[in-house]
Image 1 (cartoon, rainbow, N blue to C red):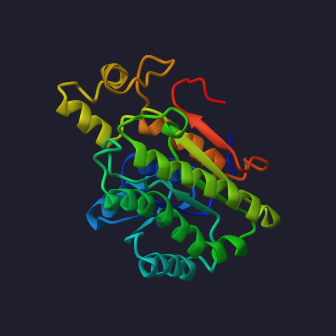
Image 2 (cartoon, rainbow, N blue to C red):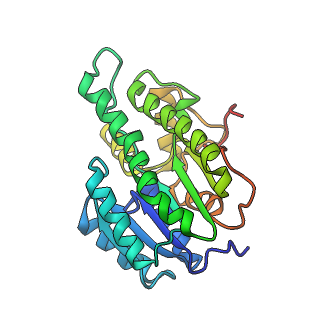
Image 3 (cartoon, rainbow, N blue to C red):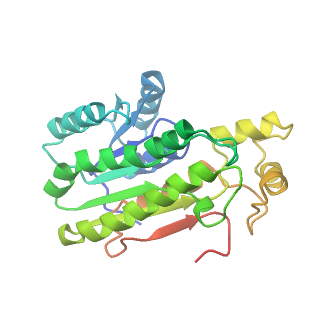
Length: 265
Protein backbone atom coordinates (compact mmCIF):
# COMPACT_ATOMS: atom_id res chain seq x y z
CA UNK A 1 0.00 0.00 0.00
CA UNK A 2 1.30 3.43 -0.97
CA UNK A 3 0.82 5.66 2.07
CA UNK A 4 1.33 8.86 0.10
CA UNK A 5 4.34 9.85 2.17
CA UNK A 6 6.83 10.24 -0.67
CA UNK A 7 8.72 13.52 -0.22
CA UNK A 8 6.54 14.46 2.77
CA UNK A 9 8.27 16.70 5.33
CA UNK A 10 8.24 14.75 8.60
CA UNK A 11 9.78 15.13 12.03
CA UNK A 12 9.94 12.61 14.87
CA UNK A 13 10.65 14.11 18.29
CA UNK A 14 12.46 11.44 20.28
CA UNK A 15 13.39 9.73 17.02
CA UNK A 16 16.95 8.65 17.76
CA UNK A 17 16.06 5.35 19.44
CA UNK A 18 13.33 2.90 20.41
CA UNK A 19 9.81 3.42 19.12
CA UNK A 20 10.72 6.86 17.80
CA UNK A 21 13.49 5.45 15.64
CA UNK A 22 11.22 2.60 14.52
CA UNK A 23 8.71 5.23 13.39
CA UNK A 24 11.40 7.25 11.59
CA UNK A 25 12.49 4.09 9.76
CA UNK A 26 8.97 3.51 8.46
CA UNK A 27 8.68 7.09 7.27
CA UNK A 28 12.03 6.84 5.51
CA UNK A 29 11.02 3.54 3.91
CA UNK A 30 8.02 5.37 2.42
CA UNK A 31 10.30 8.00 0.87
CA UNK A 32 9.57 10.83 3.30
CA UNK A 33 12.02 13.52 4.24
CA UNK A 34 12.76 12.72 7.87
CA UNK A 35 14.16 14.83 10.68
CA UNK A 36 14.77 13.32 14.09
CA UNK A 37 14.99 15.42 17.23
CA UNK A 38 16.59 14.41 20.52
CA UNK A 39 19.08 15.43 23.17
CA UNK A 40 22.09 13.35 22.15
CA UNK A 41 23.81 14.42 18.94
CA UNK A 42 25.80 11.14 18.64
CA UNK A 43 22.56 9.14 18.84
CA UNK A 44 20.96 11.45 16.30
CA UNK A 45 23.94 11.08 13.97
CA UNK A 46 23.66 7.30 14.17
CA UNK A 47 19.94 7.45 13.38
CA UNK A 48 20.52 9.77 10.42
CA UNK A 49 23.17 7.47 9.01
CA UNK A 50 20.64 4.64 8.99
CA UNK A 51 17.76 6.72 7.65
CA UNK A 52 19.77 7.97 4.70
CA UNK A 53 20.14 4.38 3.50
CA UNK A 54 16.41 3.64 3.84
CA UNK A 55 14.87 6.17 1.49
CA UNK A 56 15.51 9.53 3.14
CA UNK A 57 18.82 10.72 1.68
CA UNK A 58 18.40 14.20 3.17
CA UNK A 59 17.60 12.97 6.69
CA UNK A 60 18.83 15.22 9.47
CA UNK A 61 19.21 15.09 13.22
CA UNK A 62 18.62 18.17 15.33
CA UNK A 63 19.61 18.32 18.99
CA UNK A 64 17.14 20.07 21.28
CA UNK A 65 15.92 20.18 24.85
CA UNK A 66 12.12 20.10 24.70
CA UNK A 67 12.03 21.54 28.21
CA UNK A 68 13.28 24.82 26.76
CA UNK A 69 10.90 26.75 24.52
CA UNK A 70 13.75 28.58 22.82
CA UNK A 71 15.40 25.28 21.93
CA UNK A 72 12.17 23.92 20.43
CA UNK A 73 11.54 27.15 18.50
CA UNK A 74 15.06 26.98 17.07
CA UNK A 75 14.50 23.47 15.74
CA UNK A 76 11.24 24.27 13.98
CA UNK A 77 12.63 27.52 12.60
CA UNK A 78 15.46 25.48 11.06
CA UNK A 79 12.99 22.97 9.62
CA UNK A 80 10.95 25.82 8.18
CA UNK A 81 14.00 27.20 6.41
CA UNK A 82 14.92 23.80 5.00
CA UNK A 83 11.40 22.80 3.94
CA UNK A 84 10.00 26.05 2.52
CA UNK A 85 7.92 26.83 5.56
CA UNK A 86 5.91 23.60 5.45
CA UNK A 87 5.61 20.48 7.61
CA UNK A 88 3.38 17.51 6.86
CA UNK A 89 3.96 15.27 9.83
CA UNK A 90 4.85 15.81 13.48
CA UNK A 91 5.30 12.75 15.71
CA UNK A 92 5.94 13.20 19.44
CA UNK A 93 7.30 10.06 21.10
CA UNK A 94 9.08 11.36 24.17
CA UNK A 95 7.60 10.56 27.56
CA UNK A 96 7.95 11.23 31.27
CA UNK A 97 10.19 9.38 33.67
CA UNK A 98 9.91 9.33 37.46
CA UNK A 99 8.64 5.84 38.24
CA UNK A 100 7.83 5.19 41.87
CA UNK A 101 4.97 4.70 44.29
CA UNK A 102 2.61 7.51 45.20
CA UNK A 103 4.10 7.82 48.70
CA UNK A 104 7.67 8.03 47.42
CA UNK A 105 7.33 10.50 44.54
CA UNK A 106 8.41 14.04 45.33
CA UNK A 107 6.82 17.22 44.06
CA UNK A 108 9.77 17.69 41.74
CA UNK A 109 9.25 14.23 40.24
CA UNK A 110 5.60 14.98 39.59
CA UNK A 111 6.60 18.23 37.90
CA UNK A 112 9.24 16.38 35.88
CA UNK A 113 6.66 13.91 34.59
CA UNK A 114 4.33 16.67 33.42
CA UNK A 115 7.24 18.65 31.97
CA UNK A 116 8.58 15.74 29.94
CA UNK A 117 5.31 14.02 29.18
CA UNK A 118 3.03 16.94 28.32
CA UNK A 119 4.67 20.35 28.07
CA UNK A 120 7.38 19.09 25.71
CA UNK A 121 4.68 17.96 23.29
CA UNK A 122 2.78 21.22 23.76
CA UNK A 123 5.87 23.24 22.88
CA UNK A 124 6.57 21.14 19.78
CA UNK A 125 3.01 21.39 18.46
CA UNK A 126 2.85 25.11 19.19
CA UNK A 127 6.12 25.78 17.33
CA UNK A 128 5.17 23.49 14.46
CA UNK A 129 1.65 24.86 13.91
CA UNK A 130 2.55 27.58 11.38
CA UNK A 131 4.45 24.99 9.31
CA UNK A 132 1.64 22.43 9.59
CA UNK A 133 -0.96 25.00 8.55
CA UNK A 134 1.14 26.04 5.55
CA UNK A 135 1.28 22.49 4.22
CA UNK A 136 -1.33 21.09 1.80
CA UNK A 137 -1.99 18.29 4.28
CA UNK A 138 -0.78 17.63 7.82
CA UNK A 139 -0.91 15.07 10.61
CA UNK A 140 0.11 14.99 14.29
CA UNK A 141 0.63 11.73 16.17
CA UNK A 142 1.37 11.73 19.90
CA UNK A 143 2.47 8.78 22.03
CA UNK A 144 0.46 8.02 25.14
CA UNK A 145 0.50 4.69 27.03
CA UNK A 146 -1.87 1.84 27.82
CA UNK A 147 -1.28 2.48 31.53
CA UNK A 148 -3.80 5.32 31.25
CA UNK A 149 -6.40 2.58 30.86
CA UNK A 150 -4.74 -0.15 32.93
CA UNK A 151 -3.33 1.50 36.05
CA UNK A 152 -0.11 0.56 37.83
CA UNK A 153 0.66 1.57 41.41
CA UNK A 154 4.32 2.08 40.50
CA UNK A 155 3.58 4.55 37.68
CA UNK A 156 1.14 7.15 39.05
CA UNK A 157 3.03 10.24 37.82
CA UNK A 158 3.88 8.72 34.45
CA UNK A 159 0.29 7.63 33.93
CA UNK A 160 -1.15 10.97 35.00
CA UNK A 161 1.09 12.79 32.54
CA UNK A 162 0.15 10.43 29.72
CA UNK A 163 -3.55 10.85 30.52
CA UNK A 164 -3.07 14.61 30.34
CA UNK A 165 -1.29 14.26 27.00
CA UNK A 166 -4.18 12.18 25.66
CA UNK A 167 -6.66 14.83 26.76
CA UNK A 168 -4.66 17.67 25.20
CA UNK A 169 -4.37 15.67 21.97
CA UNK A 170 -8.14 15.18 21.86
CA UNK A 171 -8.58 18.92 22.34
CA UNK A 172 -6.08 19.61 19.54
CA UNK A 173 -7.99 17.31 17.20
CA UNK A 174 -11.05 19.51 17.77
CA UNK A 175 -9.14 22.77 17.46
CA UNK A 176 -7.36 21.80 14.25
CA UNK A 177 -10.28 20.08 12.54
CA UNK A 178 -11.15 23.31 10.77
CA UNK A 179 -7.66 23.24 9.22
CA UNK A 180 -8.11 19.55 8.32
CA UNK A 181 -5.03 18.71 10.39
CA UNK A 182 -5.62 15.26 11.86
CA UNK A 183 -4.41 14.60 15.42
CA UNK A 184 -4.29 11.07 16.84
CA UNK A 185 -2.75 9.20 19.75
CA UNK A 186 -1.00 5.83 19.87
CA UNK A 187 -0.96 3.97 23.19
CA UNK A 188 1.72 1.26 23.18
CA UNK A 189 1.44 -1.61 25.60
CA UNK A 190 4.36 -3.64 26.91
CA UNK A 191 6.96 -2.93 24.25
CA UNK A 192 10.55 -4.15 24.51
CA UNK A 193 11.97 -0.66 24.78
CA UNK A 194 15.51 -0.02 25.94
CA UNK A 195 14.33 0.89 29.43
CA UNK A 196 12.00 -2.12 29.78
CA UNK A 197 14.66 -4.53 28.52
CA UNK A 198 17.13 -3.00 30.98
CA UNK A 199 14.67 -3.42 33.84
CA UNK A 200 14.09 -7.08 32.94
CA UNK A 201 17.81 -7.74 32.84
CA UNK A 202 18.17 -6.12 36.27
CA UNK A 203 15.68 -8.60 37.78
CA UNK A 204 17.37 -11.61 36.21
CA UNK A 205 15.20 -12.00 33.11
CA UNK A 206 16.43 -12.00 29.53
CA UNK A 207 14.83 -8.78 28.35
CA UNK A 208 15.61 -9.58 24.73
CA UNK A 209 13.29 -12.60 24.86
CA UNK A 210 9.80 -11.11 24.35
CA UNK A 211 8.11 -14.16 25.92
CA UNK A 212 10.27 -14.05 29.05
CA UNK A 213 9.79 -10.30 29.18
CA UNK A 214 6.01 -10.63 29.16
CA UNK A 215 6.17 -13.25 31.91
CA UNK A 216 8.19 -10.81 34.04
CA UNK A 217 5.77 -7.97 33.34
CA UNK A 218 2.80 -10.13 34.34
CA UNK A 219 4.58 -11.21 37.53
CA UNK A 220 5.76 -7.78 38.66
CA UNK A 221 3.06 -5.46 37.32
CA UNK A 222 0.02 -7.65 36.59
CA UNK A 223 -0.14 -6.36 33.01
CA UNK A 224 -0.34 -9.41 30.76
CA UNK A 225 -1.56 -9.04 27.19
CA UNK A 226 -3.75 -11.48 25.30
CA UNK A 227 -0.68 -12.41 23.28
CA UNK A 228 1.97 -14.32 25.27
CA UNK A 229 4.84 -11.96 24.47
CA UNK A 230 5.91 -8.35 24.68
CA UNK A 231 5.76 -6.22 21.57
CA UNK A 232 8.72 -4.91 19.60
CA UNK A 233 9.42 -1.27 18.67
CA UNK A 234 9.23 -2.17 14.98
CA UNK A 235 5.61 -3.23 15.52
CA UNK A 236 4.69 0.33 16.53
CA UNK A 237 6.25 2.14 13.57
CA UNK A 238 3.83 0.96 10.84
CA UNK A 239 0.79 1.99 12.90
CA UNK A 240 2.20 5.47 13.41
CA UNK A 241 3.20 5.72 9.75
CA UNK A 242 -0.39 5.03 8.68
CA UNK A 243 -1.85 7.58 11.10
CA UNK A 244 0.71 10.11 9.86
CA UNK A 245 -0.02 9.45 6.20
CA UNK A 246 -2.39 10.73 3.55
CA UNK A 247 -4.00 7.28 3.55
CA UNK A 248 -5.42 8.22 6.92
CA UNK A 249 -7.90 10.78 5.67
CA UNK A 250 -10.77 10.61 8.17
CA UNK A 251 -9.45 9.43 11.52
CA UNK A 252 -8.81 12.13 14.08
CA UNK A 253 -9.12 12.37 17.86
CA UNK A 254 -8.59 8.60 18.16
CA UNK A 255 -6.50 6.72 20.71
CA UNK A 256 -5.12 3.55 19.11
CA UNK A 257 -4.01 0.74 21.40
CA UNK A 258 -1.03 -1.32 20.20
CA UNK A 259 -0.79 -3.63 23.19
CA UNK A 260 -0.98 -7.26 22.18
CA UNK A 261 -4.64 -7.48 23.11
CA UNK A 262 -6.56 -5.98 26.01
CA UNK A 263 -10.07 -5.23 27.19
CA UNK A 264 -9.77 -1.57 26.20
CA UNK A 265 -12.12 -0.06 23.64
